[in-house]
Image (cartoon, rainbow, N blue to C red; front, side, top):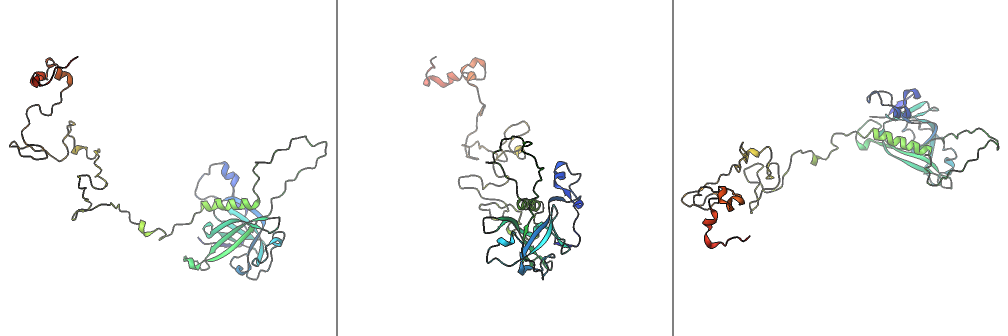
Length: 332
């Protein structure tokens, strides 16, 4: 994406006006005419005298000094500058600058513009706004940063033409109240319009991502888990001394999910407790964390309160008699 030297001026028919572009949905987002965001003829272009020859429309022998009124208000001690009259075409593809007097122009891709800002010229009461551009040009097309030449270009667009009003007599003038100007937004000057157009088109043409721009430390797409790994096992981490789970990692959060629900419930919905089985030795040995002794009939059965207090309802079996006299009768 290098700048291009042109020998013929662009025609306005080569572009699509921004107003027309905003009023309708484009037929395609690929191809088509570039959108013209700003156009001006007879603008002033300045560069330092030491940088002559770096742009096609600033030949190395150019001696034209900045003209008034901006040139007359330059600060003392400023670097010697030369001036050229140019036409500006700020479009969605590039910034095109053409000099009719030099009969040559330059198409500048927006990534070449490293800095653009509004610059005020003048030391007195009158200030003249302009747009400052810093271009990074590579004379031999090299990609190394050391190959770039910096060009400081200042663009001063011509003032907007004053609106013409037909003369009227005093009797023809309608009596209208003056509109308050406090808090009313003032229209942008030409330099601000130029700056906003370059900003908008620069956003449409970001710097290309070149190979090697990303940090190497982020190139690795592996997931790294913290914790003490068990020697000899890949991806297996030791739990805590209290029996807790190892550090969080996929599959070790302890949640029952659709992927592992079959390890905890059978097809009828009965709890099977995963792969762990509790064994009970009839001789009284402790296995699986359960005290020895065989469990009797009905162990683990949950009975409702009504069944316990009303043996006639069935299932309770006269539990109140079995409790004996050690428990006092309930008083209603």
